[in-house]
Image 1 (cartoon, rainbow, N blue to C red):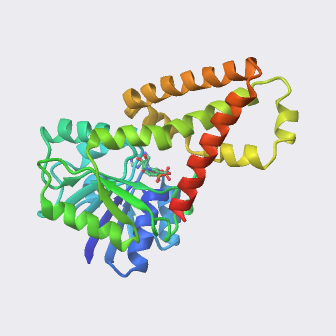
Image 2: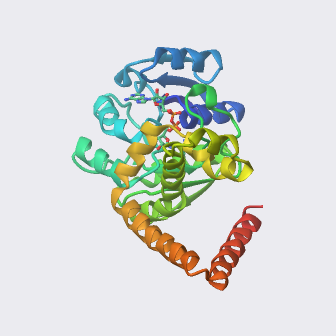
Length: 288
Ligand code: NAD
């Protein structure tokens, strides 16, 4: 049971953790913290948080669990604001989509890795943001990756793992570098492609007509281009190295596809499409 949970950044991710823990009866009190008064009032009216403050230093006081769910670009300032205000025995975790940058921020602020910080990332989300987007079942049967450091206390990892399990998630562990490489491929690259496709089509002269005739395929492929641009700017910059490598690799594949088409090589196209269909069918079977 968490006595007092401080959620810094009460949006889709932080709000959904609070709702899931409340529904499971595993948290006594939730304090919300953020910049937008309107969002915090909304969170309170939706029963996500009991009360709120704009001051991180106040929000974390007396909290036994602190969840940082702000955009990656706001992590360092948030850590600076909570430094020196945590209660004895408090565990701090985050939900940031890139782990290397968060760990750099933590080390910079605390002059090393403190034993109470557990880096984490829920592999769940939608293209919506803000408290209103939060829902209690977001983490049901979804994965959460923890990337504890050698300095991280086992007890802190245990408590964070327990929190995510109470939200309905399955918790796994990875090294930081491995996490950032895998997520560059499976999440960050697809978001870049969706943003880039919609942007390039929107800038075509006949864009009105293109969007008017866009059907299900376009909608499915581009859903994630409705995601929060600030959050995604931060994610791309935070995972610049791994993501750049993935983009370069993908650009090579795209050139190969273009060349195959230019040659009118039907067999070549079929090979690529069949390989892709098999891989996706396997993935969907696995998910189901
Ligand atoms: P969100 O926009 O829904 O919520 C972020 C909240 O942080 C907002 O309420 C915003 O007001 C607040 N905020 C922004 N800057 C702040 C600051 N400087 N100080 C205090 N509060 C601030 O975003 P989200 O989808 O909940 O994402 C939160 C974190 O979770 C991000 O680090 C993101 O990388 C990570 N994440 C997102 C997803 C996803 O699919 N959306 C999935 C996994 C992890």
